[in-house]
Each structure stands twice: as structure tokens, then as C-alpha cells.
Length: 212
View (cartoon, rainbow, N blue to C red):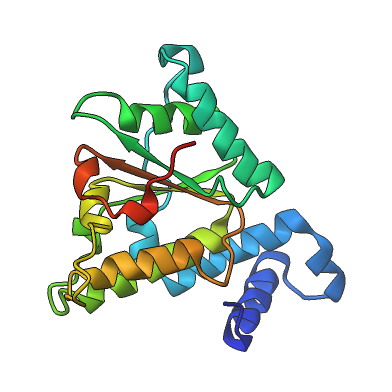
């Protein structure tokens, strides 16, 4: 959400970068992107430093063997370049060591203009608030992603992020509900591509699984 407070922070960031402010600056896409990144750093400093651009990008495209990289690339490009709503993310499944993270690293290595935001459900936990803390941090992660977009959000342990809901309103359902609300909510994600990895597809909430 772009609130008046965020507008003020954006203007302050532009002034920090340029030394002054004129309305024409708002037409400078590169400048505004840099200003939003500065806002994200200032608002979510500690979390920002933990999750943004932490993935190694030293993989050559030809090092990943398999046609899936072309499908992954097609979906990511549809999200970033064409705004295809159906291609807002992907679930990668397979046993440990099957190349799920390597696939994301391969694509990111070839697309260095796209930020990566790398985290996991365990990293989102807040010991002082086991349920609501993770929900709050999940919202913050997506706030950061929207400000630094284009961005890939990479979640390891997706079965812990969005496990199958109980249907009885258990506390564990809160994180799944929030995640689905962010992904499919009224406010569309723009140039944010979500990658989930899991080796337990059977316990992932069915709402996240759709054949492509």
C-alpha cells in the first residue's frame, strides 16, 4: 500500500539522492527505483539486510541441464515483462539435492537486474510471537519485494510456509491464509515472482498447486 507516509519517505529518498526535489524526477524510472530501494532499506533495515540479494549468482546458463529451466524462464519473463497474472510464481518439488535452488540461482545469474529475496518460514519466526510474528514478517518481506521490484522471492521449506489448512481455524492456518491472501489478494503483485521449494508436496496446501 502506498500511504502518505511512504510518499513522504519516497520524496525524502529522492532528495537524499539528488540533493533537491522537482516533480519531473517522478518521471525518471531509474531514479524512482533507487529511491524505493532506499525507502525499503530505511524502513526494514535489519530484515532487508538479511534477505535481499543473498543468493550466489555465479552459475552459467549452460551449467543447468534440463528443459525445466526454459519453462521456469518463460514463467518468470511472463511475470516481469508481460504482467501475466497466472505466472506469479512456481512450486519446485523434489528430494534434497535435486537442483531446486540451483535452478533459481541459474536464472538469477542470467538476470542480474532482478533482485532476489531469500528466506524460509523458520527465518520468519519471532520467538516473542510464534504465530503473528511470522505473519507480520511475511508481510514485510512482500513489502520489501514490491519496493525493490523486479524481484524473485525464494522460499525454502514451502511446506512449512503454507501447509494444508486444517479447516478448523487452527493457529497454524494463519500463515497459510496470509500467504494466499498476498498472492491472490485484491492488491496485485507487480513484477514479483515467488519461488517455493519443497520435498513434501503432499502436505502443501492444495490452493498453491496448479498444473502448468
